[in-house]
Image (cartoon, rainbow, N blue to C red; front, side, top):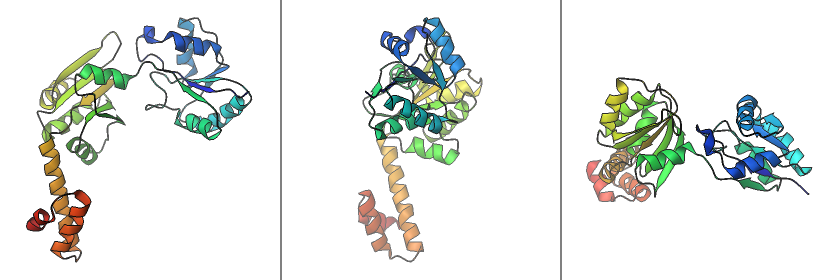
Length: 269
């Protein structure tokens, strides 16, 4: 019989957050694929787990995935872990899962620690409709576009060195936007700072935070999103007219694409 892949989340800080099911899986696996064998080795040592480790990271994941798929087809069970949290979520593992699916191998995912989910709940912002974007864009224009068009709560990782600048960009767009800066979650110096974009931009602009940070940002006000769409649509009409299209025809085309009224776009062209 073929083996299977078991995706195992590991603690994001507090070692006690590992689940009993994860420990059982790690003990029973034929091999554990991990980002850093030394770091995972310390975790396993803490809980008395004896296991065979193999490195699986961004540099070697395609080669390792092919090797591990072969081993699974021969009957071995492979546990996949990252340094912290859930594999694949801003961590290696996507290639492995895709390779297993393509080979018809079963993929089992265990629930467990996740910095993104912990921050979402701790922020106290709406969680019925949210998105995770990994690390925030570094380019100011892309960051502005993300914040301006945000239709749901945003969860993102951010570097301590860039969090002040990112908050300042948001404050310039919407100083009253609700934000939470979640730092060192589950660790000794855990901190969740909640407030407006302007308040937190001032807080972290005067003192660079330390540790790992998850930023949670509230959705843009509906009126602001509507205004942005109207502005972009008007700009699109202007570009079409500049390229030779008739104003009314340009307004009709953009209206069909955006759902706005053609007469409103024509009057602004």
